[in-house]
Image (cartoon, rainbow, N blue to C red):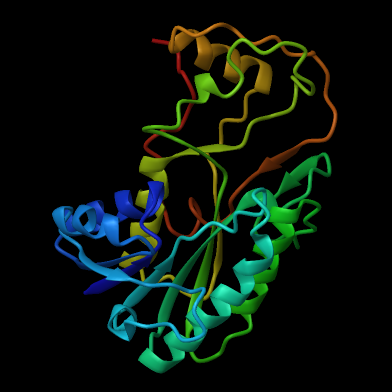
Length: 266
């Protein structure tokens, strides 16, 4: 089976390496020629794919059994308006190549903080620029009929190179300290993606989030301590919040998280 990964960043490259180790043929894309040797050394077939161009070159990249789209909207940097047009060009290439199965990486940021638990059965009501752009992208893929897309919404991402202890280390008067955290470790991001491919689970929406939701105050203080960093100081208050839950990963995919609990007692 051939899997093409559009966007070999922090998650995409790690997924690619895991799939190569499992015996998949993996094509990886980058927009930087300097990164091509890195992809090749990882066992990928490397491609330059620039979705900013009017015509997406290297259609050979899109010749695959499964396409994983893992490019961020970059809304915070002001590039959010370019995200959906880029994905529209990707869809043109998907149609041209006849791709049948797509995994679109999204975020649980599509859910607003409405002081409740949310699952895949809840309709998102995004209230941030990134959430709005991501939900627009989801809807774009959801209405396609020539191929099936599973939308995979990751919670906050942590793992190698993303030490949560650094997020708030040494900061003071951090608001909303009693709000629950919604996080997932990269190992489980990869595991859930692989489960979707293995079980041919396409045409669905999946939330990916660990079921342990301690408070921000507890989690980030513990994380800073574990990393030997200055402890943050939170305001013990509960303002806007949400708890991300999944009706799919456990009930349908039967996926067992590798990281089930944050900083469990030894």
